[in-house]
Length: 173
Image 1 (cartoon, one colour):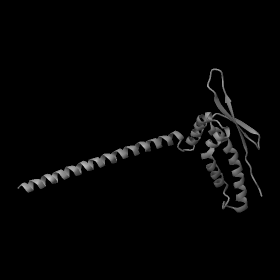
Image 2 (spheres, helix red, strand yellow):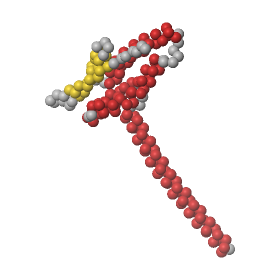
Image 3 (tube, one colour):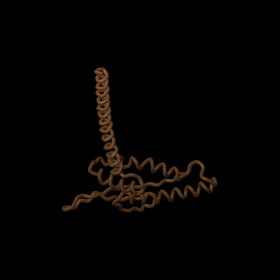
Image 4 (spheres, helix red, strand yellow):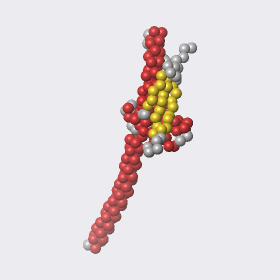
């Protein structure tokens, strides 16, 4: 059984100066080639990883094409997309759990937002904004529904009074 492997080591470094707020940066290393690079945004680390993953996928695709003259089952592009799709939504939580620090959540969330934005996906703030807007619209609809019910009751009362008045007038005639 042939097995391709792409491995990375991520390191996060906290830098703090006497007169400045602490900031985080990262270093990512491709294990097989021993190549490493620094990053300030997680999107940069993802781009670094993707180049190596793409190389393996392309090599696998070339091999698959030679063997089967088509893609069929085991499409490496589909498997790579599935793997990234499975990992990305859980990444921030996995990072927070492994590091055990709530202080990192903001920088990691910013990095994830930058990554999602680069992929055309809504950022956390956009999702939260949409949720807040939906809550506002829901409250407004509830208020309007209550006002409509009140107006319908008032209209029914007016119609009942009008009917009562007409009945009394007919009786008096």
